[in-house]
Length: 408
Ligand code: PLP
Image (cartoon, rainbow, N blue to C red; front, side, top):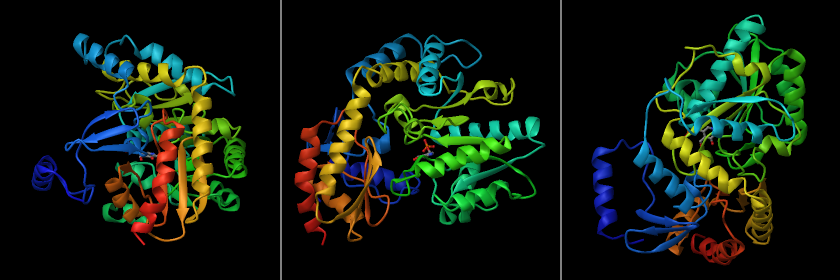
């Protein structure tokens, strides 16, 4: 793929001055976006089926989000968490309202900046809970192939040796169990983890980075029952699945269970960096003053952005639109002869391919004007902006056979 001067210059400076932790970047320099469309420095347009890895929930440069960020930036950008902030309380109230759908519980949130930071906070809360209410229990059980972040503790929680090994020793007290294996989970909650009893199970309702692998309803129900029986906590990591991505405010609401702690990020700010974790009932008061904090978390800009995002996501019929488009996308993908399985919920969608060509399809897709993603050699993952329409999906489905043929 030939790229213009702006790309070449950007790549040269990036290579010289930016750490190479992301490997070679894709061959497009995006400079503008609108809804489903991204535009590169050469004026070429692309349909975005990744949305910045599930972040740009309301589409690129949504006018209401732009106005909220511009307006807030012009009024007040930052004052610190030593002070009340105009939109923070109303935003928390809205999030707690969404979390209580289907369970009627009371919730409280802590605002952070990223998914990893939200998970760190959730695990700190669990450890404090273990000290205070569960005889010092502190072990945290997570699933193999999970992804919970890149900080030391969230890396310890992430069930992938290849990501962990270069950074050993990681914080102790983590155990990884086979995903969707109830017997393994049962054994784990009865085990000792680095000399501690377990205090929490942390799961993604749908493993995203591993390739869109959903929990079975039985598995999540068992995780809920096993933790409840022992007074342990169930944490769900909704960093990728949450904020209407799966057609409900949070993916756990598909499964008919209520977790104790929920973490979120990505789509909550629609592109503005933001995260949060929430705890229900009395658990929300476990972290005492001074035990957790953030300079930037829940600041004026992030809260104003998130309020604008929620105005869009909570509009009548929007969740149904996400469900409908997700079903349509999965249905259309399933008709393609080279797709062997389609998984997911709402607009978090994974397609297994009969050949290990997904990374090459991402490159060819870009050339053809589609932003795609390959979490594994034989899996394509689709996380479009939630405002995607059938016409965009039809364009993708029309293009995929040629993209596949090109990489054979
Ligand atoms: N948890 C899950 C399920 C994720 O998908 C991710 C990121 O992809 C994270 C945590 C980490 O989020 P962040 O990159 O914002 O720290």
